[in-house]
Length: 276
Image 1: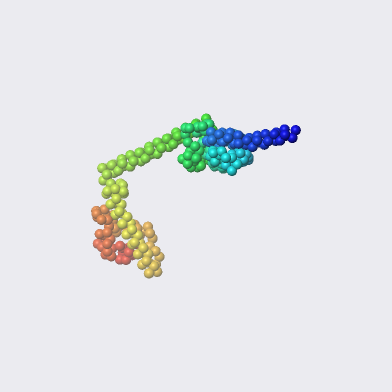
Image 2: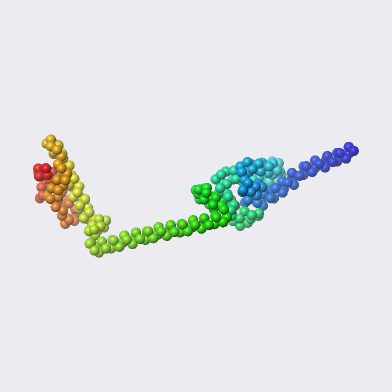
């Protein structure tokens, strides 16, 4: 009787010691075959996955295949897949990116084509991280995702075409005006090119000369204890004394280069009385 009990005890202990090893081999084989499917690795589904269920499944599998407890040669590789699945599915941004990968890439058992999640995430993960959650969720839906992707491509093409048309329209209008300006009025109507640029520069110098004269008139009025000259009357009188002359090739420097001129200099001293 005692011998039978001892033999039964030995058989039971042998079975219990071999059972984890058999389960470990099965788990390692299953995990490595589904290394791209993190939900399958943890025996979960996308619809029922939560942080609690992911951690629970992770700890349950780790007790069996962890290299410290399992001496299988592929235990480390399988454990790294389980760890990656746990960290990915418990990190919101990574899970959001993985869901898009899960629905757009081949994650079937022993899949050979395509790339794994790490390779895909290094290439496309940055772009996915910048998308709003609702768009990533839409792209993760098989049918809706393809439709949304098509709309995004069409929007990009239309937007690029509009930019090209606007650029070409700007260039055409710009060149037409340039040709008409140079061949028609010789550039007088356009202060950016040719004769127009020279005339614009002359008028700018004339305008600043008038402002300098007005400042001198204000200074002398202050010295005499008088009020400042009226700007409108001053500028009107100044324009009458210095009519516009566009014949100078270098602007008004020749006429307004010294204190005295044929027209009474700047008009701020000798002609001051005529401004007020």
